[in-house]
Image (cartoon, rainbow, N blue to C red; front, side, top):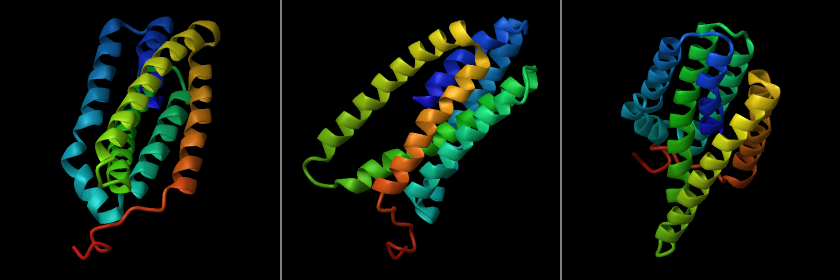
Length: 173
């Protein structure tokens, strides 16, 4: 939800602050690369340090993305924010998905995965609409400040309800 929340508002905010369309396009292109390029190593990182730790790292990178965006309104600030957001999404999404898979490995696993996917994409849609509303009413800074609320809830939930995931060493690998 946070990725969609911030990513939807960023190019609109860039336009609102007078940046050319090409700058928004380039920033979003780097964001998409940052979302998927780490996938080549994220699985290995999860195997080495555990899904929970990688998910936490993803949330911390998402927070760093919001902080980077709060540093200014230049193209670099938006671009850095979007790149950090992309890497944060990759670690957070893949780490959390791995946690869901570790949680249940029996007959309920498919239903739990389906519910998880439904909740993720419903929250992403809601986040997109909410960010546009906040951006139009209160500005880019408020979008970024608002992102810390669900980020804090996600970190707390991950720390409280996750029993920790096993690393390769824990599994004997």
